Amino acid sequence: MRIRDSIHTDRLPPSYYAASGNYPEGFDRLEGNMHAEVCVIGGGYSGVATALALAEKGVDVALVEQNQIGWGASGRNGGQVLGGFGPELAEFDEYEKTYGASAHAMWDEGARCVDLVRQNVERYGIDCDLTWGYFDAAMNDREMHDLAEAKQSLERKGFRHPLRLVDRSGIKSVIGSERFIGGLVNEGWGHCHPLNLVRGEAKAAEKLGVKIYEDARVSRLDYAENHIVVDMDWCRVTADKVVLACNAYLGNLVPRLANRMLPVGSYIIATEPLGDDLANEILPGNHAVCDQRWALDYFRMSADKRMLFGGVATYTGRHPRDVIKKMRPKMLKVFPQLADVKVDYHWGGYLSVGLNRIPQVGRLDHRTYYAQAYAGHGVAASHGAGRMIADAIEGNDERLSMIEAVKHYPFPGGSLLRKPILAAGMAFERVKDMVRL
Image (cartoon, rainbow, N blue to C red; front, side):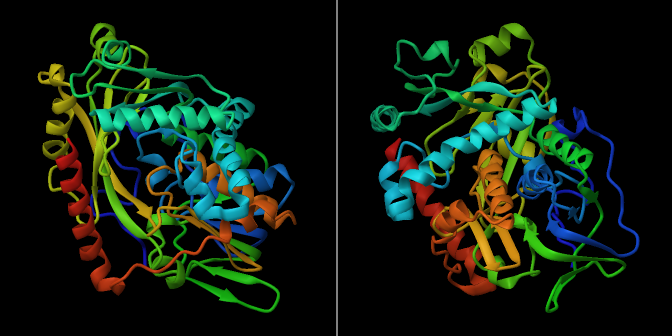
């Protein structure tokens, strides 16, 4: 079954990212059968990062994507390049609870994954507007207190990038909005054009020998004694090992993985270009921004000075009938000065979330690897996951063993009830956010 997303077709969505893409050239369609040492299923960050890392090691790789490279969350997200493997890097006690004796090493991995993005962009000359600067925005004193503690925690752990607390007196130097009272500036994290990143990395992998195929819908996996057949009905890839990097669009290909994550909708609008004066008033430091709520807003400025504003997080599986009608009022609560600005683009789709909101990375067996459920923080973490899987395939599974030791349980309620249960839980969290404000 082809996994569709009812908000868009099987082509790249009509987003700002697709309209401003630097890598419009497509990839081949597989005709006939072939063999590869490793077959990667999924053309998002996890799949492409794994394929690229394997190609750097000289491994023979085929990557198959059911639609187009970057079609899913990797090409639709807010473009925020943030560190952390599940818990925020400032929450080291959560790393200890989650990873136990491996907490320090996994904290380091959470910091390293941002560097992997930086290295790929620099090494392969990827044109994706990578820009450094991120702001955690606080709406109240409790959130400010938490961010002050976060700064101290990061500094104690040796976080090597500049951190700066901003209070009411300095907030206008970072963001032109009355909605926030302060926050934490982090110059080690940043933002990029996410579709250009994933397609640029795919082109780099292709140059290193990775065979990449689009419109390659996998219908089943057949395991034989010495190989795995990746069956796409009209053609097949026979491989020694398989990497499942389908994330929210896995469908029922592997039920054991599907029932441990939930597709969650997230949506973005992009305004017309604002011009230098208005752009500088709104985000004078050109930081990517998130607020601190459970169902948060996230936003940033594009390279051509458009406001990209995202959020919502729907757990029901249903997309809004009108994304602009849903998102524009949210944007105007933060930036009322955009009331007369036109919205040029809107789009959305699914990301995936696990019960514990920890990325699910590991092995189903000695030949089958997987990565999924980044809970909306996957731009950088997916690169770390891809590197871990590539290393493990080549015989070094130290890092992969640490993250796959985390237990991930199926969502309660089965396939019929898990979405209503999670939607009710999200409604409760939103009520708590409103009470706190």
